[in-house]
Image 1 (spheres, rainbow, N blue to C red):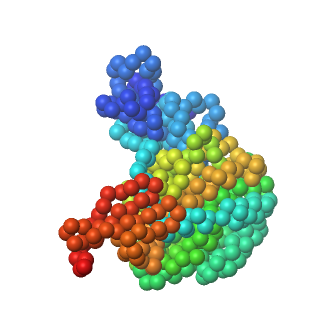
Image 2: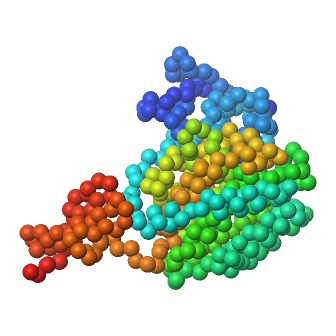
Image 3: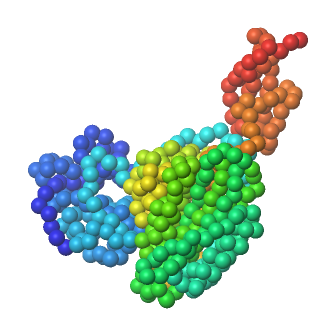
Length: 443
């Protein structure tokens, strides 16, 4: 370890108490404040040579440096003293950088639920935990899915057969991993002519870091959970017609350094990059690491619109607590973001509490099927908006009588006002104000 000579005084406070701070960084419901060593921040404040931000996969940094005590621990993100700076700035599993003032490393999303769309609600309701569990159980039954193993090829064959059965056109691309060769699997389903494409991705490979390439690496959560999620979302979306193309991708070489996604993005012609409306990446979605079921949406400014869509979908169709971060790291959304393509990651909250990833104990025993199902419901609801259904869903209902029931718990009432125009009032658990549908009703 090396030390720096920029002493600061710091204090961790509830975010609600940090509104007037000039040097601060927010981590969800907690904020760290800091200033010159002589600045008075309160009796609980402490000093450090400087502050560093650690972004990690699971608890990988804490595993590598168990003697480093974080000044603030927010799962995927830590703040440590610069006195504990490691000699390396990063590897495939963690990254260390200077903590910048005025940043929101993790935010807590609090969007209002949108009005439930009956067509989207019906799609969400068709999610099959049984189908998802069956695929994930099969992936995790293989001794390993290391990128260069026969187990990985077997898993790729299984996924290809599933995609073909769902009506996707399947191709495989070669992925260079060190001196070896792996593959990525791509499943395409054309839309009706919208011109865009939406990518749903995950990495199929698993790894046992301490045991080596031949060791058991069931990878149930990392990333059988995301890979089975790609197949389940592909199944759901195949039951509808969409304006834009769907592309499912299972990457190889992720655990060795994002090789599959890096090489895929590098190979894309500019015209193809321009067609991408969104990239939804899933990596570790099935371990419940906190009391409340929580998902982290991680992206960048280029994907902020898609992040907002997912947060709204979560509030409308699930009971998930949503956190967001514009600090992308160490999964297959990153190469897309680096190329200016709107991509984001959905990952279980507080993933550093999951001590089983990258080991032989990443098994089905430690999964929470209900959390995975909630994340998939959020994802498919957002995907429906990005893909755009070809069957027009009217923004204004057309009366088929004075009172119409669209579904359970939903009523629409139509009346003629004194202005001779048609007016509409809706009930979906609560009554909404009348809206004018315009026109003139002749009597």
